Length: 379
Ligand code: SF4
Image 1 (cartoon, rainbow, N blue to C red):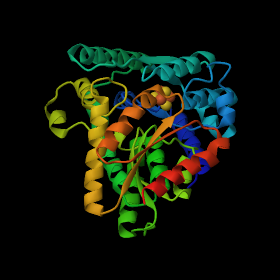
Image 2 (image 1 turned 90 degrees about the vertical axis):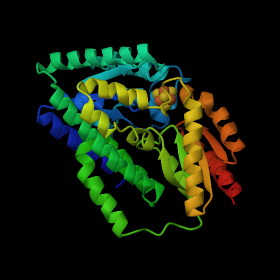
Image 3 (image 1 turned 135 degrees about the vertical axis):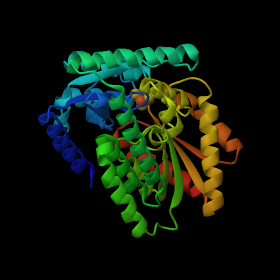
Image 4 (image 1 turned 45 degrees about the vertical axis):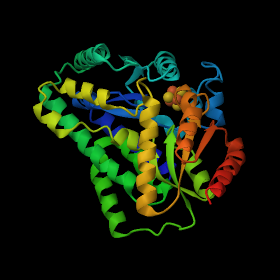
């Protein structure tokens, strides 16, 4: 199951959706976009979670300076060059313009404007207090109205509760995938496929988990265990292969594609008692304490999460655990805090490799050398 088969399967899947009258809404792959609301309105939420290469980055420079993050550059490149394997992007009906970061908002606006895809605005506050939570609810209400106007159908509370429950269950299953003892590259492919297909992929996920449990793989004792944090590894990015080539194995993905997404589960008691499902989405935003979008205590929460996982893992497995903090070049959110994150974790005896890079394939040798050097240090 390589990236090419994933992309061609996705293309068929999306064509089938369109043939059934489903509209596709794309957005950049971070968090806080209310996919449950899109789903309840009958739309298919499509995450832009595709990595890049030199050609895609270069192709974006008519629109954005090269000092924009490599992921954002590649998203523009996908639209301006339209490689064959990404022809499914022509199926997108709407693009969400949101403000996860400056690059996110610029890219989404450019794609909408220059590639003629109607935009849906959804702005997310950078702080968390009573006013910002009220603002978040207003944004939800506005988006709901806009979706209803497009379809001419009301999004009932019943439908929205149903979607919330559906995504909750899906995330519970996804959490189990991250805990499986399998090769990191294999795990990542399953996580990527699941996050592209959404809850419809849940039965396949369950079968996969069952298969792995019944047929445990023997991981190389010599490979070094890695907790992977920072920016995600998107589809078509070879970073996970480089880490494995260097002798490492990612055992936990603490990224947008990985636990950061799947841990955002709304608790059952709130679902049972809350009358307004939009308030559940507000609650999900409020409880998203590991997100890099909102200001309060992000660094503290991140350090605590990694430290807890590290302590538990090293104690129960009796193995060393390294941390790779992946920084896509010019990603402000992850790069700004990276030296603090490394310092804070190293004070606690946890070694960290801050790995900054763009999608240039020419740098693969250099990256591999850095990974190998870090893994050797873990001896
Ligand atoms: S700057 Fe970082 S958070 Fe923003 S689009 Fe790029 S990778 Fe995502």
